[in-house]
Length: 534
Image 1 (cartoon, helix red, strand yellow):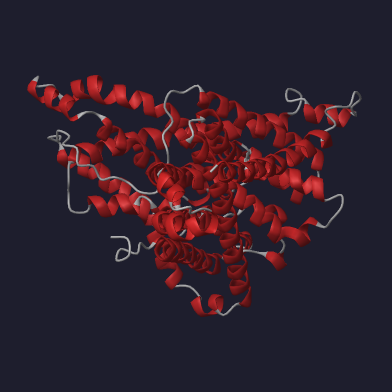
Image 2: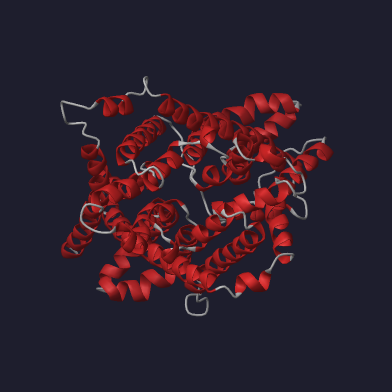
């Protein structure tokens, strides 16, 4: 038993060292490339590194924080209103379907959502905004499309957490809706809101594809886009280093702030539709209208894009060899990244649960935290560090696919740990003694015990990371070339060339590819064998 624990610990430590290397090496390359250790600076470097003396850096940082703040304010405030409407409206026939559809933005690639936003609010869309779409307005609309459903899914469980007897007492005391909000709902929400706000703010701050596509010019540049432009267009690595360090500093400050919170909600892939009996509001017409408006806002971009795609040159796009080559690259990147994430997370979680089983909770938490800490390091910062580190010895563009796979695999680790972690912990506590008695360990235990009972969260984790990597534009935009273009990069290239009909069809193809891949992986890997394990 001790030998087994030692092997799991050694494997877990190897993964921790590997993660530390892939995080620290790019960051150290940024640090040394910026000449921060030197005592003498050129005038240009001094101006670049001085925030107060550089209007460009001021503008980029201010706009990054402004768009993230406004996006978070809109998403959380509207999400709070709609989540409360869901909670107080009660059950209705389409409730489960609507809540399930609200999960689509979590799987839809950002560049696809951009096309949907353009289809609805573009010059020829259903609600044309014209040139106003490109800039802060378009960024806010796209971020609201992604984060409004996320806020609803995170805040709606708060109403379920309120004890049933509290609702019963409030009814006996004839509390009004306003009094119930003040004494029951708001105290529970007050604990959840800071974590939700920080999570959505971080997502908006590190948003890349949305700002790159809908920014509309230099005035709407964020740190992520500025890093990309400084490397791919301006060929100014020193500026990319400074911007990356600024981005990292802001992310770390947010991470430190998050650790001070007493409650941090988890993003779950499934949503409970609640059996808790919450007193229904008398103004059901108004609540139903809120739910309907939110549903239309979330679903209309995808619906408009699909309708517009069927009116375009479908045959021309589908017979283009570039599309299928890009699809092959996307699928390869997604599957490899998913396999890397699941494998690394399994090693970390196995070591963590083994030590938790033996009562060493601090070391168990350390293993699990090591896989989640990478979330505070933006992927474009890691990509920039690798670009500068490797460009001295190799042609990084020739190694685009392996680099994109590695970065996406690492960035998927927090999601796998959050999805797979609880299942592995419960499974280990339940079957550890049985496996020890049967002398089952290693591959035999995984084959006969672990995988059959854990295949559902494994399949969900694999599907989630694969679909996210398939739709990622940030890292491939940094390293990709026309010869190694993935579907998101090909879509962005067609958008940049104003080939909107071709881009729309490509976007629908990418969306269907991600959804089908997600369903196939979750279905075939996660399918339970009920007859054998009834």
